[in-house]
Length: 444
Image (cartoon, rainbow, N blue to C red):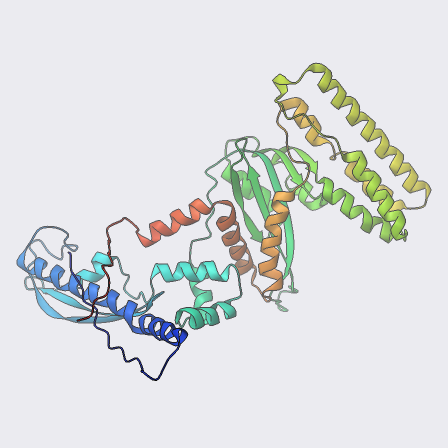
């Protein structure tokens, strides 16, 4: 169907003076409230009339699902529907046809457009809501849509749309990654006194990186132990041992134990190792200057730089030099542990002692495979900051399901933007079958 539409607009501009801003706001309000939604409704009405006429006359092309063996359709009535869209409320009075042979009726336009029986919104509006709520609260989203786009969507409605959506689904396709990052961040959840659940919730995230640098988001969970998360990761990589070659984490004991069977080896994040030493010494009542001195010493010990070449291109003497440097670093850590213990900082000494075995895994990983892996979990830390900003600073009183879902939406939008676009292109059925050309506005 091809139609040429004419715009009819009554414009009254006072000769006593007006501002450019007033004119712009007036045109914007007119088109947001009536214009754009009216154009969509008119185009659908025109298409509906042509579609109904062709079906009655028995023309070729698309036809609705057959109601009987030899359907013969005639005009019956009209179905009036209203839909929330990002351009306003669209009203459609579409034709209902009735088969004179079996008596069943059908609304062709509804079936042609793929509109569900009780659908009251468009998928493109659902996408707008999902993207906005991933950056601000539901209350602010509702106010923002109403103020900026003239789209009245109550916060409870926006919440229901997001929770019913599948836009947060993450696809790993059974990929094996070289490095797996795992971390968690707390948030204020909705307490439940009947089950003894307090308001301290935690979202836990696992991201992988393949040898070619592709990020594989395994998921986000709330209310799940690291052991359960490890089992979920293994399900995505069934028949593959293991899911990752190296696990990089902040050294949390439950995390390391729960994901032990997921990776061949574990690397303790150097940044966290130095950062948490301050807290351990603080508990030992060490002064601030002593804490900073010991942190600087540990950071200096951990600073082993690996060559940029692959293993096959690195000379044996270079490998020997790195192994020797690693052994020296481990000896210096033993000296640091002894010094901390001698000064009465028992908790700090135990902390460094427990961390020592996983501080140089990345070196041994390089020596064995030639692949240079991260020694800090900076990638997932950046991700956790984004998740924490949305879950901690913008809202509280989350349900565990809602917090995990929001985290997955943020992860998908950041790490796999292409999959986010592909999901919505499929939902919106973007096929290039709609072409609109603006030819200008003329004075009648």
